[in-house]
Image (tube, rainbow, N blue to C red; front, top):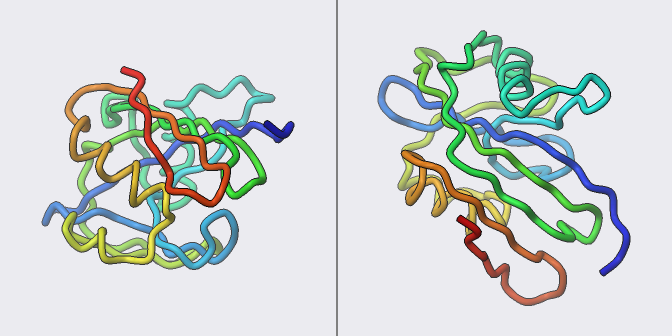
Length: 162
C-alpha cells in the first residue's frame, strides 16, 4: 500500500420539503463534474469535531445555520487509496432541517434537488453509487460503518464494519 495523505471529512445530506436531496455539481476536484452532497474537510488544527465541521460546512456552502440537534450522524465511510491520491474517512450526516429554496451557486458549483430514485441516474462519484446511497438507504435511521479499498482497476467492494 502506498503512503498517501489521509483526509477526514463530513458529508451532509439535506432535503427539501418535497423530500428531494440537495446535491452540488462540483466544479473542482475531488469529483469535479459530478453531483454529490455538500461537505468538507475537518479543521484538524483547531480540533474541530465532525459535528462542528458539518455545522460549519452547511453554513459556509448553503448559508444555513444548523444545531447539533439538527444533525444525525448515521455512519462513516472509509475509502483507501481514493483515485490513487489519498485515503478518506468521511462522517455521514442527515440534516433534519428542510430547505425551502435551492441555494444559489457557489464557487464550488451549482445546486440541484433530486428525488432519491433520480440520484442513481445522475453522474455521481463511483463510490457514492456503490457505497454512499445504498448505505443511506439501509442505515439512515441508525448508525453503521463501511470501508472500501479503491485501489486497482476492479470494482469497489464495500465491507460493512458495524
